[in-house]
Length: 105
Image (cartoon, rainbow, N blue to C red; front, side, top):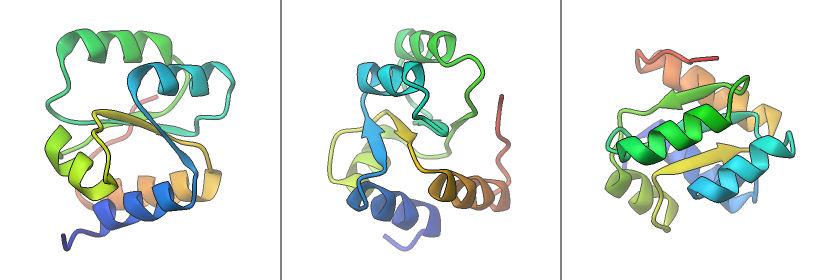
């Protein structure tokens, strides 16, 4: 794995600043802990609708990575995750922007 964004996501997880899974991410948003929500590009439509409707007002991004790629980078099955640290969220936003992605509010 030689991708700065995936490496940084792994660092974020190891630092304990990430929640993984649909229900856990929604709970993080409701508690106002989530600074950034990230979704795999092959997330199911039902899960995508559920998450996006529940996270209104929170910045989110659909990444250019599949569930398998995210899962490999994080060491846990993952289709949706939230970052709960402002510094990590800011750096991830920069890395996403540098890859040509755009963030949604």
